[in-house]
Structure formats: structure tokens, C-alpha cells
Image (cartoon, rainbow, N blue to C red):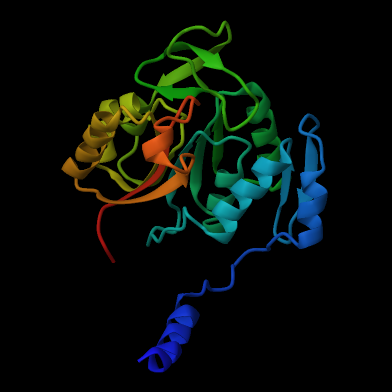
Length: 274
């Protein structure tokens, strides 16, 4: 029995192996060089198909591999000019991915952090983005100015405790979405503000085909996560969930991470199974 199972195990391993990435991978030496770079200056990395300005090499490697090698945002549409809305665009790697797979797409990208927005603009310009609208604003549940914790990194977020003196412009996302009849892809990675924003956008989300949501929460906010999932399912979305950051090695022992968010999930919402 053991011997006869060996060929089965080999076949299973081979069939489960990942297909070759469609985009350029970092070489070993490129990664080594990047990991020794500073995190303060703006630098330029040239790929085969595009160029990327960046500050933080670790975030460049991590995000690029997630988006271009794993292609977590890959989607199909029959629309030759899809409408894509990128909330929490950061330096623009997600926007770059969208414009690479759908060059004729109309893209709206929102990023409130001034440092990140500057790099986003540079990346849009150096790669010749067309039909692209960049918004230096946070997405929220009303038109206002918000307290904002500006880190110049993926950790930048709306400060709902109002402890930060830094203020950013915020737009009401539901009102913005209401301007369109159909939205092919909506990405929402807004560092903890998603629970309020999704609840405010439910009617407008009905016109979205593909909705990516990065959820941030604490271990004692299970009811909040449950409510959010019920909301997106109530308007016709199928849901698939993957861990975005696995920070608790021994959850029964550690209980909490001691960081702003214990739970980070990638939630993929789509209207029908093809």
C-alpha cells in the first residue's frame, strides 16, 4: 500500500505545482540588493514591461510578488474598457497591475497619504497611464476632513480616535460609486475603515462585478466580521477568504498580537462562478 501510494503522491505534487508566472520575477541577487537599500529615498526599479518608483524595498518585494506573481487581483471581463476603482492605491502597484492587464481600462485611484500619492503620480507618469484619474483623498462615509496617521507606508490609515493632528480630505465613496452604471472591479484596502465604508456603500456595491476587500480587525471583533460578510452576501456576492497576514503563531496562547490589527484577511467577492 505504501509503495503504490508513492506514484499517486508524486502526481499530486506535480499537478498542484504553480504555473510559470506571467510577469518577471526578482532574481536572487536583485532581492539581496533591494533588501539592503534604505527606506527614505525614492528609488526606481526597472522591470521588463514597466518601471516602478518606490521608497520601501520590503514593501516593493512583498506587494509586487503578491500582485504580479500570485496575481491575486486577476479577473476576467468581456468589457474592453473596464471601469476599475482602486481605493488605497499606495504607490500604485495595484493600479499598475490593473493597467497592465487592461491597458484601455478607465482607472480611478484614491490615496490620501501625501508621500505615497507623490510616488503614485510618478508611477502613473513614467508608465504612460491613460484614462487614469488620481485622487489624493481617503474614501469614507461623508465628505469631510479626517484625522490621518501618515506613515508614508502601508501602515498609513484614517485615525478614528482623532489623535493625529494631520488632516486629509475624504470623499463619500457611496456617492462616488453612484456616478457609474457599472463597475468591473473595486479594490478596497483602507486599513481599518472598511467596516463603516462597506455598510454605507451596500446599494452602490450591487453594480460591482468583482470586489476585493482587505479586512482589518481585532480578535474580539468577530461579530463585526460576521456582519460584514453577511452584508456582501446579501447583495449577491460569493465570498472566498484568504489570510493576508498570519500573525498569531499560537492563537490559544497569544490571544492578541499587541498591534492595531490582529486579523488581516483578503476577501474576494464576485457575482457568479464561471
